[in-house]
Picture (tube, rainbow, N blue to C red):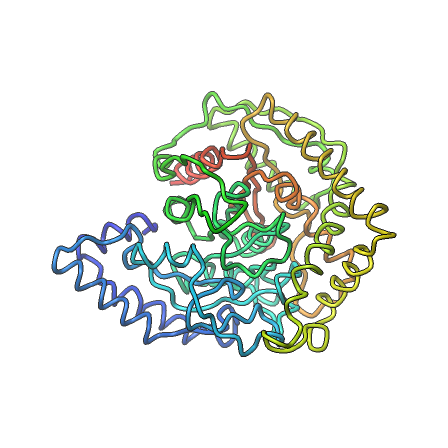
Length: 457
């Protein structure tokens, strides 16, 4: 049963909302202690909402398009009366006093929020190991990382703890864990989803997006989350399509889809074999496959991290211990402190021209080159991450950890939409296929995802 089918069963009273919620509560109670996907759950709130929505259905009152669906929310997005810790001791006692714009939308459409999911501290990481509350384990590959920074959201979906999870993606933080956990993760076009209420990591790169076990869950979420928000200065005025219309896509005839030579060369051979198989499936679905080159791959990580350091340093100046919890430098973990210190250094006037301004120039170059690649193709496909997830506890140098992001940061630097869908497994470890398109052509990614799903039925 996919998410769309579940919504129909709920509306037709064939599935009780209370039963849907109680099923997830049972799974969370059974598994969360070992998986550590959720940092906080509120069973009473979820059950009260379930009863409220169930009564609306019984009384034939109007219900929202998310009626009865259960959501997990990354703990760096404000939800009233939940702990918004960003997985840091800095904010361990910070209770959300308001709902972020996307949370308001979920509630208005009768979605049910069951709890807050784990993440790398302040979303600064690629494995969820830097969380103050401990690492999230990967339900799909035991003993290995769930990915990050939205590892808790991905693990919650993989372990069937909720219908849809919400994450944030600054350099791949939705797509990376989606790949590692074998679920679907989607980073919309920059500005498509309001970020009002998000604790920002890097404001020019951050984007909120959904994770689910099937494409209909992603489509339903995007239909409700993509909207103009006057309270977010980056928000797009976009007459977005109905993403569920893509569900009937059975082939990709007429689509021209590119693979990138350098993406393939950089990825592990075990991953490439699985991705090559997905490319063949897409070709069998009628798409024309072409190989293109992107000659600036070596620029992407340094460009991304230089911008990230500076913007993160700026974002964390409000955590001075006066209004919010503790002073961040006094209690944060190693990776967060590294980024603060690097951002502080680069932000100094004598160094900004040498590093930050050059990074902005490189970003423009990368954006121009990606735009050129999209002149003649509808989509770009390839591996989501270039290597398999490491075992929890393995010690990686910072640059080894950053290497997970090399294929995902491009979408954030350029503002294009990107999604990750399971392509297969290598010795039982999930491997994700990344699909990217032009800004505001998110629908094309959903078409490809639905086509792949429908071909597998």
